[in-house]
Every structure is written in C-alpha cells, then in structure tokens.
Length: 149
Image 1 (cartoon, rainbow, N blue to C red):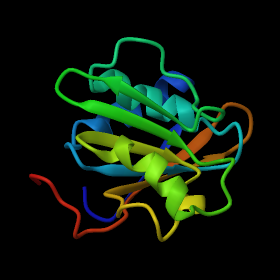
Image 2 (tube, helix red, strand yellow):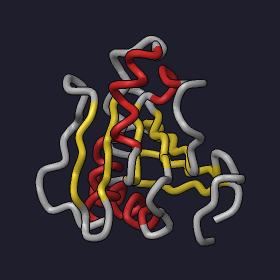
Image 3 (cartoon, rainbow, N blue to C red):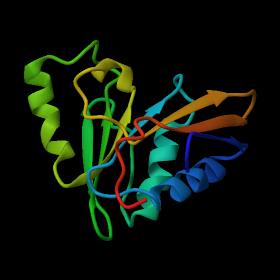
C-alpha cells in the first residue's frame, strides 16, 4: 500500500476485516495510530488486527489501564489508549515504552503522544457516516518506516 486507502464499513465485522488485511502487512516494531471520535470503532479495528495476528483471548479497550499486551502467533501485540492523556511527560513515556519492545503496537488517541511516540508506519482514521456506516482511511504515516515491503 502506498499513500492512502479508503474503505467503507457498515458492520463491525467489516471494520475487523479491514484491520485484518492491514495486519498482514505489519512486522515487529511497527506502530499503527488509530484515530476517530468516541464510538467510531477504534477498538473494533484493533480487535480485527489482533485476531489476524493470532490473538485468541478478549481484546478490550485499555482506556482505564492505558495499555494491554497480547501474545499473537508470532509476535506480541500492544494496544494503547491515550484518551486520558493531554501530552506525555518523560515519566509517562517511561511507563509506555515497554509496550513498544518486541511488538506491533496500536495506539488509540495518538494525538496525546505527538512528538513522544515512535514514528507510525500507518495512520488509521475512522469516521461516522450515519447509523453503523463508517469510513476507514489508512495512510502511510511515515514512508521511511518500512519492514520488508
């Protein structure tokens, strides 16, 4: 994938399928940011990617715990939610840094970590389109971040 892709989703399972297709392109060390308003399906998207990466247990929003680490088939998968942050201090980054070691990382609400997070390989934006309809945009966030393309 080069540039930007846009997908329409009318069901959570479709959003998960879009995420699963993206997951096939990811490697250890990749960071994927996932943005959108409350209720757009950010965690649903991450769940679809986690399933494609072999995570079998529940995949839930880490809003109140900040992060979850899952074991997939061949890699660890980290899922961070920065909703409660308004920027990252050095101490807060120190708490988050281990989630990036040896894993593929998904970051919801990445705006709070701007300037502190490692460069993202892909940036996902999910938008409401009325009812259950969503637009899922996936962009190369930093084309310099490549692993095996």
